[in-house]
Length: 190
Image 1 (tube, helix red, strand yellow):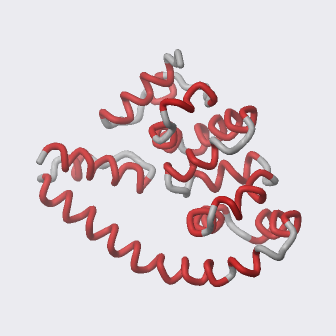
Image 2 (image 1 turned 45 degrees about the horizontal axis):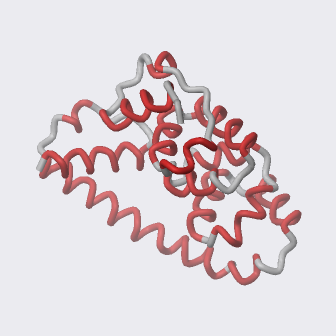
């Protein structure tokens, strides 16, 4: 049961992008699991409607030149919505657009993107851009950087660079998983 509690807490941390309140940490494993399932099911039910609308526009997007899509995104689409679009559409379709966006917009969007999708996107970008994006996310939401780094495959870690130090997380409660990631990446020897 402890393993399930740890998995549920890790999921809640990544999903919220924040520290887990002590009150939640002290709940029984059963209650934490019920809360996680409730949040997952409620969120997925509501988000499916939005994803359906995004998918309906996928065909149209294929015919819009990338420079126009980039202009529309930067000027009319909030980073939160861009994250949802990136999660919904195929990376084959969105990567040429993502590559044309500036570091600031990508960073702001990745704060709202699922950590595993962020990691996948980062690994398709140029190395110099990866570090700039991670360093910017570190300023926007330091916990998100740890969550993203958690999803970088062992074989790809040598291509990822970020300026991490334990001092940056001094006043933040870190789960064991996040502590492990911080220690691994702040003393990076990949």
